Length: 313
Length: 260
Ligand SMILES: Cc1cc2nc3c(=O)[nH]c(=O)nc-3n(C[C@H](O)[C@H](O)[C@H](O)COP(=O)(O)OP(=O)(O)OC[C@H]3O[C@@H](n4cnc5c(N)ncnc54)[C@H](O)[C@@H]3O)c2cc1C
Ligand SMILES: Cc1cc2nc3c(=O)[nH]c(=O)nc-3n(C[C@H](O)[C@H](O)[C@H](O)COP(=O)(O)O)c2cc1C
Ligand code: FES
Image (cartoon, rainbow over all chains, first blue to last red; front, side, top):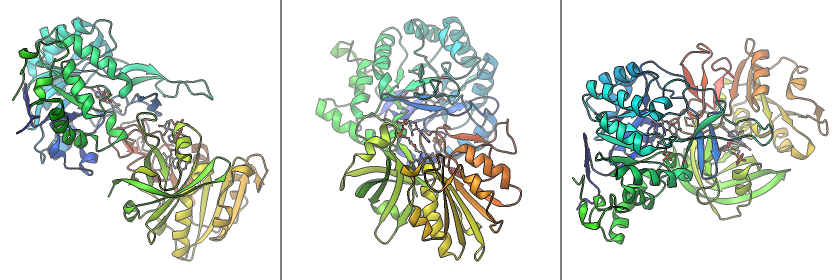
């Protein structure tokens, strides 16, 4: 019996495990390591209308049980993604979630309109929460009205369901979630990275050329769990959870908090085989915990035992 | 092909001040074909340090299924690694990147190998390959001081070797370029690995007259080309969006290919 299949808007997942955007490129490199067909889905690198080089290096800095990154949304641009990257991914039986970014509403609309028509793109992930770009990015993710407007604009042009990626760099995450739900979002993905900084012992200066960067990895997991716990009780749309997942146990904790699927980011750097390992370990862990299906775990932290089976395939 | 293996420590010893030579054995060695490639090593257990550490392959011994690295124990990860003892297993991902092409040197001709500090190790396998191909090698190796000099005899056994130290406590006082400026112009090719200022100096002085290959260093996330942590601009498009990744397009580039 399949214990892991999950249905979400636009997404028919054989399992709820997918690499997070920006940590897996467009799949090619990891495709040399293992068969990508085993993945539930794939969140590909943020795409902007035009190619972007991103920030100067150093772009990454290690932190206690985590890392900072300030890649700056480097990507080859919409045309190249449509012509090269997405067609290459067509050989896999894996739904693609296209992460889209921009510095103004029109950018999101341009990318969404075109990329949502690619045959293997089954959902969009609106990155309104990148802390590493000067204009746009984070302002879309911290002002509820702006977030709702960009969601509405993208919904109006997208051929596929739209998930909005929330920034943890806000005082009231529930307010943000409800704003994008009101804007028509089909789902939420959370959390993006937390803004942080590291200084060099010798020079006293920031290690990252961009000075600040986004914190990810196990260090941010408790923040992600708390935010998903709060948001999942305040909205009716499903959540794809992320932030520090390293193990199958972490996945279950995200489900308990209220997630219906999860994405794995930074862990791919520590162990490039982490996604296949988690997918293999999950059924064993679920059995050990006495569940028949992973959907039984969703919202267990706040739900009454009888109430769920939501989003079950 | 890139593989991930728990490789066994055959030996580990401190060969100079805070400089460790580590030999590992495992089937991953059969994938190692090019000098200048590197491996990505998980140090310690658990989530700290979280990221792998990129370390160059210093020599490859296919017969015994072993390879050797030489690294400086400095920060958290490399210090942990230096405490590991024989028979412990080390989590290795590799071989990664594109290394030096010994074939670019001319058999019977002379080639200059320039290393700075922890940039010296990958030149050892390269020099072995070059001498096997019948290339004369000259080594110019720069260190901080006498205490941190390593592999001097090993390089001497392969060809002419000059050592520089910043404080003059061993060899010539100064930088590698102080020695190179005085060498006769007999070589056609330069292979170099070391700090960026050293690579820049070599590039600007010899790009026009010699074939120059440089091995770059950059902070890494994935090490396999997926995260865009380690990119640099191409020389043709120094402010545009064309790029090379140090981890997967490099770490070795022809001088003039990327912006240092
Ligand atoms: C392709 C390549 C080959 C290398 N080969 C060797 C070698 O043969 N021998 C050797 O001693 N060193 C080598 N280095 C440098 C080595 O990777 C760093 O010294 C090491 O990562 C520092 O880790 P740490 O735990 O000592 O320091 P920490 O301060 O704990 O490191 C913190 C973070 O910064 C990164 N970092 C710090 N310094 C560097 C650096 N100079 N380059 C890249 N990342 C860095 C670490 O990887 C880690 O992610 C190489 C680097 C690269 C990119
Ligand atoms: C190197 C790096 C690049 C990232 N790039 C993107 C991106 O392009 N778009 C995006 O929405 N999130 C990006 N993220 C955020 C991740 O998708 C994820 O939300 C975050 O890292 C938390 O998960 P983790 O702790 O499992 O990494 C990036 C993260 C890292 C570490
Ligand atoms: S380190 Fe990830 S792309 Fe080079």
